[in-house]
Length: 164
Image (cartoon, rainbow, N blue to C red):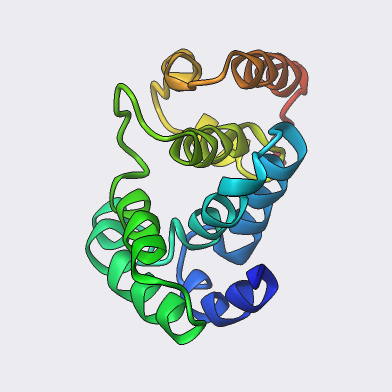
C-alpha cells in the first residue's frame, strides 16, 4: 500500500478544503478504527477516503475537479485503470446515497458522516440553522455507526457552550 505517499501527493490539494488535511485524516482514522475492512478492498477503500474531497471545498468542485486530480495522482503512483476508475466514481458520488453501493463506498460514506460528530467538526454543522442531525444519522448505512453517531450527538449536545 502506498497510502502515506498518496497522502503526501494529495496534501496540497486537500489543504484547499474547509477542514483541510485534518478532516481527511479524521475520516481515514474513523474507517480504520470502526470497520473491519476486508483485505481485498482495503487499498481501494482507503485510497478513496484519502482522495474523497480532493477537488475543493464545495461538493460541486469535489465532483467536477476531484476525479481528474485523483486520476493524475493515482496514475503517477502506478495504480491501474480499473482501480483509478472505481476511486474516481466514489469521489464523484460520495455525497449521494445510492441504494446498493459497494462496501468500499459505504465505508467512505459512513466515515465521512461520522466525522461530522467529531469535536473538531460538530460545532461547524451544529451552528447551521435547522441542521438536521437525525437525517444525517438515518442515511448512515451501518447500524454500529448509526449507534456511534447517536452517542456522539448526545455527548456533544450535553457539553455547554459558553459565549464570551
